[in-house]
Length: 254
Image (cartoon, one colour):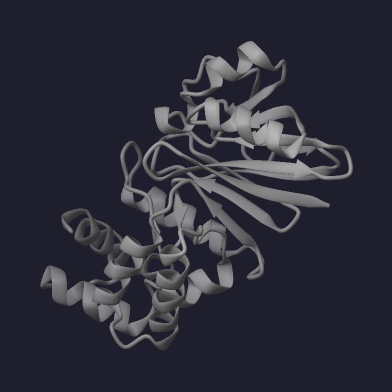
């Protein structure tokens, strides 16, 4: 049985512990800071047996050097990402049989060239590619790469639990409301999200089912989303990928 524990870090990051409760061990996902991870490991009385990195940005890796001074463990990450602490470079479709579960590596470039996600046991750790209610910025890749990566994630089972790297849901849903102001699923999600944040509770994880009904970046083929994107840019958009590119630029300007 897995217990997924969020560790708030930095301004709005989440570091994740994937805890195997039977074995009292865990994986650490994207340790942007060391101190809160050490505290969480002690609080849950678990031993880390590995680190999963989604991409090279410092807010997902900066705590790793200090953690490796304390714990001896392998570090998994994409072969394409320039992260010197990686001990096990990974490629697309590779499987990791760790902590009594199998996680599959999914290459999802766009945010960075080598960004990967980890999918297993009904969970998806997707870093800064798919966010709750939104998606990451396209820094190193192309718009078409990011669109294709999101489409790949959308093919996973709808009950997949989505664990992303930041608490961005409120801001993302505010933008989503601009795109689809009449979406009833979105209206309900906004209310649910506000209720959670008023209690200082995480809005992550989400599910793919929820994302598909409320996240505009996964709804680029929907008539109302296309219409909103065309209204923003002022010209006709022929493909869903083109709709995505306009939405991402629109979000960048907000």
